[in-house]
Length: 321
Image (cartoon, helix red, strand yellow):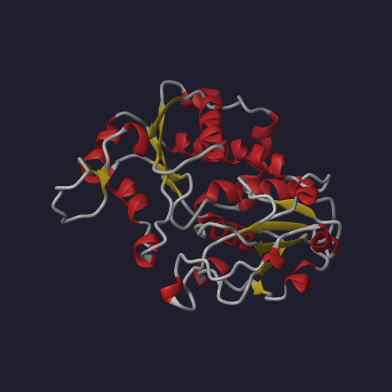
C-alpha cells in the first residue's frame, strides 16, 4: 500500500478488520517490520488523538518517529505555485516536501480545509503535493476532505460493540456548533459505512448535503427523529455547509438549530443505541453531559481504536517498502 486516503486503499474490509483484531490482541507482533525505519508526521493543524495514536502505533511496530509542527517549529510554507514569495512565507512546499522525504521512510500528513475555496479543498492540494513530490508512501491523518484513520477506527468500534445477528442500524447525525468545521470526518464515515455491512442513514438540516461522491446511495433523512428510530449506533458530528446545493454557502454556518443537539430524548428514540463521536466534542452543543457520560457512550473505546486502525495502515505500508 503506497498511500492511504480512502476506504478503497485498504482493500477487502473483512481482511482489514481481521487484521485489526489480530493486532489488538498482540500490538507488538509485527515490531520487526519497523526496525531502523522512520515515520515522519507532518502537522499543519492541531491534534491530540491523531498525534498520540499514530505515534504509538508506529512505536508498536518498531519505528522511529519524527514529528513536525509546521506552524510552530518550521519556516512558514508557501503552497501555491507561481507566486512571488515576498511575504511572510520563507519556504515553498515544493522544496520542503522532497527534503522531508530524505529523512524518513513514510509520511503522515494532517492538513485541514481552509473552508473558503471549495475547489482548492476538494482537490486535496496539499496532500497530493506530498504524494507527488516526497517519493515516499503517504497516509492521511485528516485532510481537507477525509479522515480515514478515524473512520476505520469507528468501524472497528461498531464491530466490537455489535452483538446482533442482523445488520446494525448506524446513523450519522449533524449537530450544531459554534465554529465552522470541515466535512472530513462525516465524509470518511459515510464512505466507510457505505463499504461496510451496515444499515446506514444520514440526517441533517436541508442544505447541509455532503458531497455525493462520499454519500453514494445512502438514505438521507431530514427528520432527525425518523432517522434515529431503531438505531443501534448514533454518530454525532457537526460540519459546516458543504456548498453542494449552494456554492456560496461553502464553509459557512447556515444553521444553529439547537434541537439537533443529541440529548436523552433523542437517544430514547433509538434501539438502546450507542453514542459515538470522534472527539473533541463541545458539550451542550453536539451532545449533553448525560448522554456522553452514560453507559451507552463509547467515545473512549472509539478513541482507543485509533491506535489499532493506524497500526494496520502503517503495517501494510511497511510490508510494501
